[in-house]
Amino acid sequence: MDKRWRDIGVLAVALFAVNVAARLIIRFGFDGDDAAADRVSLGMFVVIGLTLAAVAFLWGRRRPLGAWAADTAAAVAAALLLTVLVGPLLVGRSPFADGAGTFFAQIWLYLAATGVGTLVGYLVLTALGLDHRSQSLKRYAETRAAKPRKVVRR
Image (tube, rainbow, N blue to C red; front, side):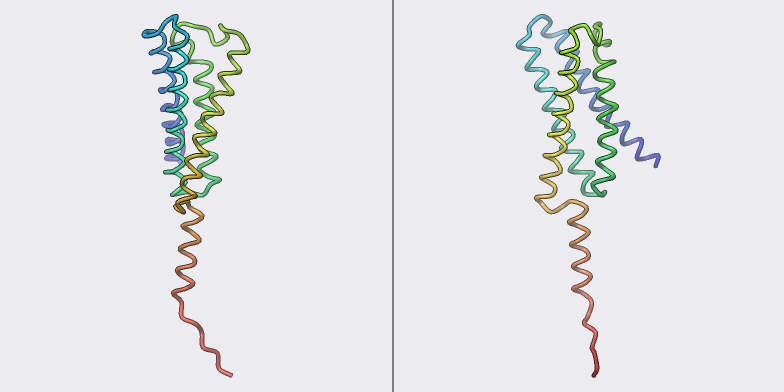
């Protein structure tokens, strides 16, 4: 159980670190240039999506869908709270400085990027037949085929 929470925490911190890096790049590299800031933000969402695709691929091989999906959702929720509430404070802004529309748009974009990333990772895993359920069914079929038939006497 301790390893499970550690994995959730590491994933949440990694997702938050990607956001902090993007905020610092925007703050110190492109302050005032909205077009560049948008490109950096898009890159941040792509990196977050790819990170979660990789996590879904790796965790989906070892554990059932319900277990790793709950862990991923907990990590995304923690990272989202950190990103929306703490992230702006690290670059000297208020979380609500740009208004409620921007605040909620940030939440929806973050959830969309994480959802798409996780879905892509799991769909690739399932298409390759490497997910936990497919492997369990494969092992079951192999053990059933390996057992000799019982001879029935009449």
